[in-house]
Length: 589
Image 1 (cartoon, one colour):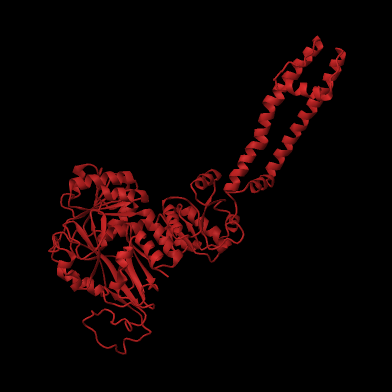
Image 2 (tube, helix red, strand yellow):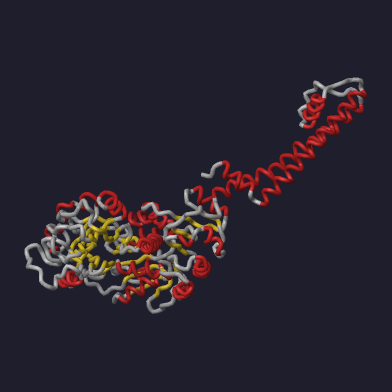
């Protein structure tokens, strides 16, 4: 909070404030001259009546009369004196009770309040500011990014063109700066040349202007922009943005990747080098009813990271029971995933179309991604003018059961709910779950606060537009290989901390201490010194060959529990943001 001297300085150095003070001082001068004049006339009239009073008494009578207090201890007896008293009262009413408050408020109090607001919403950042993130808007994506920056103590500022908006955000505890987004001077005052990153998340035309203007001031600072139309991506890149995220395409593709209802094979949702993260439906397979220990899935080489069930994620333990609606989250190499598919490809096969509710930008992106994967798709869109794929689109209200039946809802393995309105998505989630208790529901959330609500309503997966955009931007900032599997579940890599060096994976107790699961280990010496060779089990070891050169690093997928960790190794883990934070806080160097 700004100190009082800083606020006074801010007030006085403003040119308009100086003029206002001059006008106020002139008015006070006129008022003092009037009071003095009335006090002099008071003495002449009192002498006319044959009485004498001191000069102090004259000023006292004048002020008491002009302010209409009228104590009555000093009064005139003549008609001239009474008439003079009425003149003083009337002029005092106008000057003291009307003009003085108005002048004070207009030329001092209001500018003072403005100066206080300006002190709370500065137009420049302090000298020496560097390493901060500059955001040019405050909307769901940047709100999610701010939450992540705050979690890791990263400085940031939001530039607001409007002082009123800046004050509102300041009152919410958001660091702000006032400035026009199309003015190079704004970015100079924001120390953009020393920033760690700048984000542009408004509409495509405004983002292009922001990026192009910024490049005049900071030609090398990373600028991340979002595009609402795929055609805008190359234009933003030409303006100087890199990277440019088409979040509609990214979210639509992610929703399509989560669709596993048509078969029991693996579907990759993320990767880190050779490590693949995939999901597979357990419905109508022999796995239903078994624990993970009984299923012996590890014999296939895959590592079961966790289990989704009706929108809730549970980290895998040997005693985790696989239910009829369970979706397994698996980690392993491409070869290990193929081995899994060979065992379960014959189960849960469905040729029925996936239903996509909403034919907007994200709905069409999801439909295209599903078609590319070989799914049949039916799109339900209420507005006929938005239809671009007439062969696959059914025009109608998704809340109408007849429309859903025409789309194949009774037999469909999955439904994707993609509208931009979270309230509508919640309504449709509850409705679809009631119609089909066994269907896989994948829902979109615009605001992060609605993710948990949609999960409780019955969605198997909820993907947040804001969270996905924020995660992509944060990865650019940290130059991170962190991968978001779905809302609240991430893959990230860290160097083996000192606390774990020399221990085996079983001895490290990472899962028990933090909630994260080690899904791979990148060995800098290709397994030497760990007691194992990458990709081999503890019982199948042979001496290192020339191919096992120390300078080659290799990823050990599905590492065995007795793999020994060294300070040269890198861990690849899966966990939610809270478990990731616990790992970094409790175990990381």
